[in-house]
Amino acid sequence: MYIKHLKDCLEFIAGDNSHLREILNPKKENLSIHYSLAWAYVKPNEKTLVHELKVSEVYFILKGKGTMHIDNEKQNIGKGDTIYIPLNAAQLIENTGEENLEFLCIVDPAWTPDAEKIL
Image 1 (cartoon, helix red, strand yellow):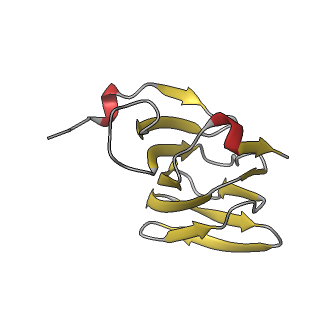
Image 2: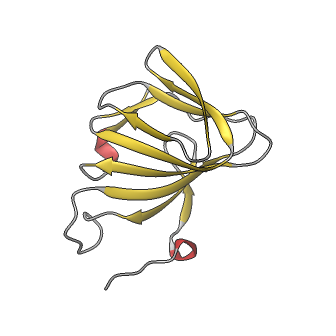
């Protein structure tokens, strides 16, 4: 059994300027999975930098509200929403609320620094 608590994951500022805690990554831990899982947040009235990944990504919104931008599309999002982000899509997430916009990030195959490009 493998259990990891969020508070035990180091928080840092990611390349896209979000606050991030990487929970699972098979490239860093001995796990038989192909994806990575992270918890992230964007502060009120802030947004991430425009970026793209060479792999697909899914966001699951835990708390707050905002606007998701993928390529030339944008849509309001909030708690309970799941967002699929195709590989190589220009993306950013914007917090339009008054509390932190918190979400899980699932990247498949697992995230690596060379898979991300800030635009």
